[in-house]
Image (cartoon, rainbow, N blue to C red; front, side, top):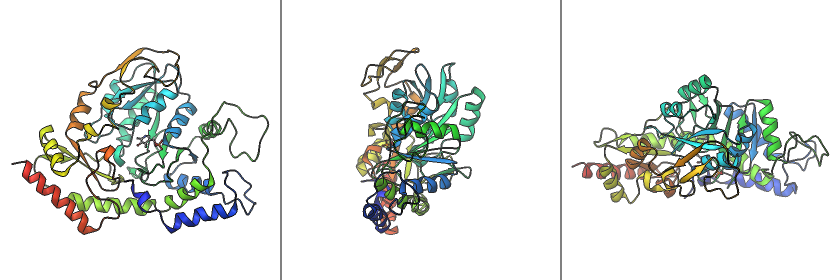
Length: 410
Ligand SMILES: *Cc1c(COP(=O)(O)O)cnc(C)c1O
């Protein structure tokens, strides 16, 4: 079961897609004066840029592509170290590897996002960038992360894939760092089945990102230009059908977020004051509201709770915890996490072990994710409600949790 945007695919998406198909023009490129060019990708980019307070938005083929593109555009390369949190989707680490750089793992705190103090401790002379991940819709502590990064001259790339629509101190996530990556896969707040986007205020970075996403071309090529390509790029382009879906979805984003926040408050209010756990720290009330996280006082309480509602603690969810990323664990030099291709060896030797972040392990072993809007067993959020749940269904889920919490704490 997917994220909230997927639950709300309807007439609007159908109409936008039919508009494209009737025009017969499926490429993102075209002449604006051509009536058959429906320019859905461009419209989506413009609307998302406005929504997220960025000068530029570029639609790309996915959140992973967006991360790789941003790192390359920012000049991250062989031998550079990039600090990432130990609790994130594996793509945050693998993007660093595909940029031929070295991921350095940092602890999370009880907001389940990067611990700013540990970020600072992990800085070396080789540190080129940091990727704060706004995990489970919760914005990172961007005030402290930006202050530390600026003081050390480190570039910030925000991984906003799980927090599209969130704000921190009144500003959209993604507007703090040099660049930001977003995802449109089906588990995210809005979706186009797959796809993603990146944002930046920097004209030069946008030009490079555009070029990387389309074989080195400068923005908005009109045809098959000869010459003028300054870098080697790849193909991360998005077509008009995906653009059409994304356009309809971005227009639903404010209502999706307000609905989730309201539902989460309702769920939370019925658990307030019960013993044995606390809620994950929410760094700003501008969060997405996709997930409610309970952090129990002990691992034993968390395990007993999970058994009763047939779910798992976050540590055991597998997919987003560094300790279970078998593809990255091991003793590696530079990019030699077990790369799918022959990597040149640069930099210092870094080893990745399943117990290297004890604080992260401790928090995640006691944490339970309850779905409010992203119903995903891989996030260990198999229990909970979805965006279409009625108040009665939300209350039933809350009452069930309250009953279990009472039962296990005596
Ligand atoms: C989903 C996600 C990604 C990758 O996005 P895709 O569109 O699936 O490539 C990257 N980082 C985080 C934190 C994510 O949740």
